[in-house]
Length: 83
Image (cartoon, rainbow, N blue to C red; front, side, top):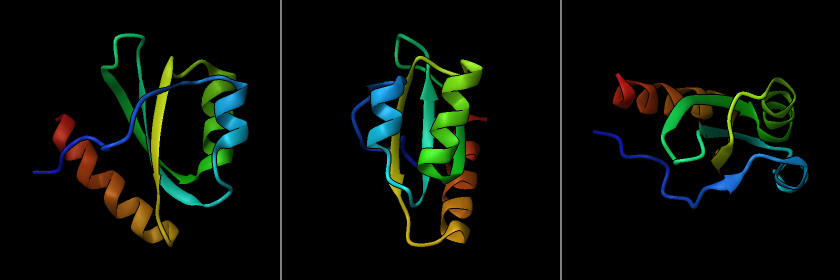
């Protein structure tokens, strides 16, 4: 069983987007209480910029991967955990 990303939550705001790496990775979007609402993957800075503009979450945490393919695989594993 895959566990949640072992990273601290950060408020999803412009500062978080600016600090996000311009690299592939997996991210979790959560509500204000830290409940995971969605899991995504892609180039982290681009993905978080989109999530912020659409108001998709209050908080975020992420982990980098070496490739987009690995990010996709890891995101699928984490989504299975939420089901």
